[in-house]
Length: 295
Ligand SMILES: [Zn+2]
Image (tube, rainbow, N blue to C red; front, top):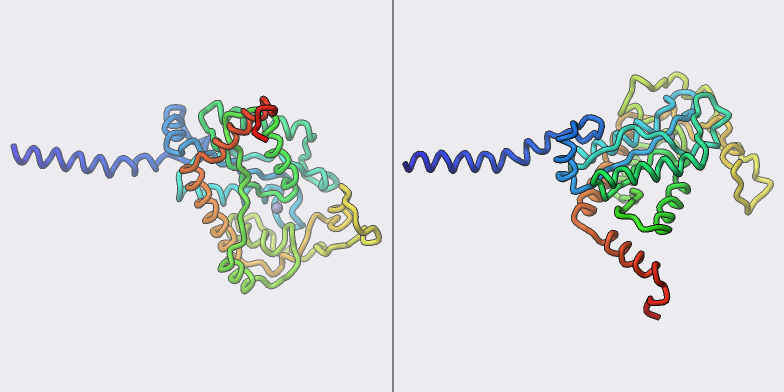
């Protein structure tokens, strides 16, 4: 009897410890989950879904068109493997009008970008994913995404949309500075090429990296104090900003891992906190009758 009790206790203890382990075996990629597992994954993720946003555009003469897709997806899946959440499949409906003169660019209309992202978020929410974190891999999206997030306040939503903003980490910045050999950049440059050499070295054509100029051509320098949509083309007509010839796998790994570390922290905090949701609801209530807002 005593032995049976001990065995039962052992089985219970085993199940207690085994449960989280088997649960974490759920794939984090949305498209790899079965429907029954999706229900479990939504629960395990506390409704947190990462939406890595890439684009299809030229990345200098040496990197693949989907570079941003590979980068943000690697950061997202690295983070999700440390703090479980669901990662949305490849998303490349992004703002990229400035590269329409280059081969391979898929530049959807502004209306479609908006609708696609809004309906994607709405559909994620309908499926129980109420905390959506955009992990942007494409610099050309930044202004669009901030405006998109701000516009969510226009009508009541039953979910929160967060735009991941990795901050400066003094320790990482010091290591990056020690590894970097160039001081300019911004697109298909030393940093981005390093990331791709770490993520998908088979797709990087280093022998091509110096075949086009990545220098700022400053073709609007005669008109200071203005912003115009043609600014990027004026500076970097080759869709290459920087010098990738000095890139390294070590720098790439550091950049990916440090961004993923910051994302892990955000996911943990977003899981624990309902502050955004509370403030949003308070705001929507006030916005429905502003005359009742305390003056
Ligand atoms: Zn890029």
